[in-house]
Image (cartoon, rainbow, N blue to C red):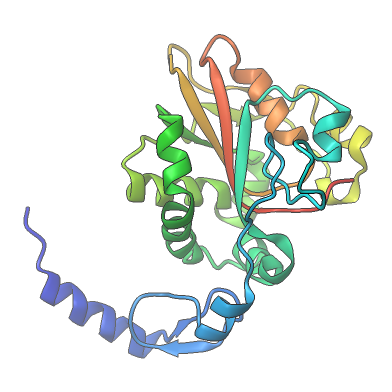
Length: 243
């Protein structure tokens, strides 16, 4: 079916009048048109750029180092990963997206990830995107899984298949931000299981909103390796400070 772009434009303009488009970072009204970052936020928000940890993509203070402190302390099950933004300036937007019902941000963030990290993603030659799952009860209360929305948005931009039910979360764990590194590992043990059988992929990219120490990525990787796939990478919106 051929889309009528002219009609779509009018529909978007009408929707913008009823529901003004807001900057996903500062939440100020931007008028009509597609959702976009306002010029002030575009100048202020920092994308993650080299020097970065070779494994988790965390910002490094020492340009001569290859790994961050977290990655030096222990071996990860995933191969490597990257984040889009430095956490600081984008934190309020992530909070609204995750807890404030602003699921419309997913489309904007999906475009941003495809634009800024598309080259990295293509080099990995992934067979599928897998969002980090939420515990079903928690997802029902929130109404959505922000990682699944991100994966779907990125999948539309890149054409990579999304496997939203490949991994399930079978235990309601404590919020990770309240825990130190050792507590995070214990908190997530046996929290994830396969949700689908018979899926065989070579390379998977895990999708989440934020990466901190890698505990979640490791536990999901443990559920997938080696029976479902051979290599696991990750992409997140932001990378936070280690603990």
